[in-house]
Length: 330
Ligand code: ACO
Image (cartoon, rainbow, N blue to C red; front, side, top):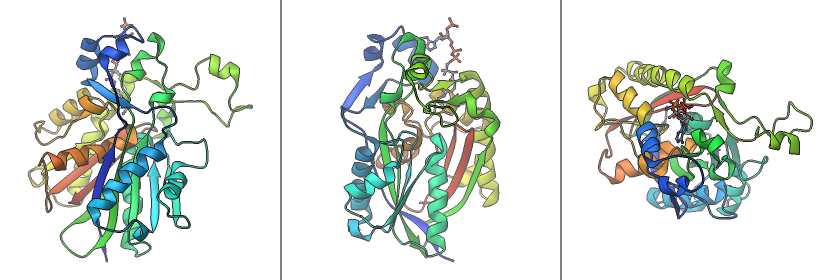
């Protein structure tokens, strides 16, 4: 059986930096509250007309370059996003067109903060079965266009940023491989972290009335998310370790979805790990949902936090609720 190797990674964030002080101009918040409750100092927002596929294509070009392949060698595209350029079709199609790969298969998956983990698991199956040989997986989000930048929406709008990360996945017979993936969800909590509208269980699915009610904005029961996140992250990380007879000592770095620094710190504590083996860069980008893990991977690699041959655990928790983990040797 073939294994799947991450042959290249890349990320792209839009140029515009929005600091906590910039947000203080828009709503009743403070740099102190945001840092104390989330660890976020700044985030990147797109410029007018810049969409998820633009960010995804830019990240993809960097991953392709690192993989040392020609763009034309890519034979499938998966894009994990909750903020596609259009309601449909998904951003994978625009990324494909932007890369000049017209004709190859492509699709979006909509698993919020667990999108990259789910996408990596799907791509791994395609590679291991020999279906494809160079899969581009993008995790990308444009969230700044969907936030309520008033004091009423401050619990959410200070958390999120825009960005994209991408990996190139190839078959491998050598050391580098995805060991296993572990995917979970619980739909009972669909409304604990959601954006209701546009809602096709309503007629019409979007209207001035619905917009006036603010039902297009993301809403979150923060405490409920926190309570579940700090249980599910350790649970699925341990599931991935146990499935491969690995211990925490075998892992060079755990790279969690960058939800909130307080969650990451609580997870590290529950795993009895220090923050030098649980990566965090949320202070620079905010919560970029499906982009957060590949962006963190790129920065952790550049900072020398891991290298070829090291074991990693990637883990996520988010809307759905969904949660998951991947154990791999990079
Ligand atoms: N600036 C200033 N005050 C704020 C802000 C803000 N941006 N947002 C909320 N507040 C105020 C509230 O109005 C409230 O004031 P009050 O007590 O006078 O009414 C107070 O802060 C506490 O508000 P809560 O919403 O209860 O804030 P909480 O203590 O739950 O902290 C937070 C909010 C940081 C989101 C917390 O719930 C949390 O860490 N949740 C984890 C969920 C999370 O971070 N999710 C990230 C996205 S989802 C994901 O990626 C998994």
